[in-house]
Image (cartoon, rainbow, N blue to C red; front, side, top):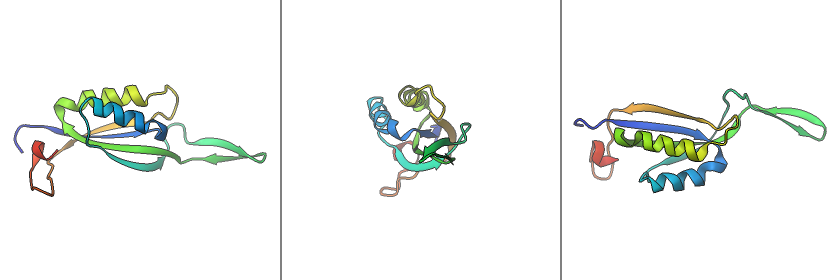
Length: 117
């Protein structure tokens, strides 16, 4: 793979922030992203709703998961962009996880590492 270090960024955000985050990532040169609709909960442990006078708890809330693999040089720029565009300041804004990537292979060409991103 050489000396290029790669990272995988996984961001869990509010679904209504997806379009804004995607556009902002494109503006900083990050076009490759995988998006999955997920459900989950964090510290807020869900929400309580009322329906016809009865309270009920929704403990798994809809979220959007973004996955991005990039070179180390782009990690901070991508993280800053996600935080600035996905943040509301309220509980439930989400989380970002960063982990190392050992290798990347483009299936179509067999390219590996940085060329495959």
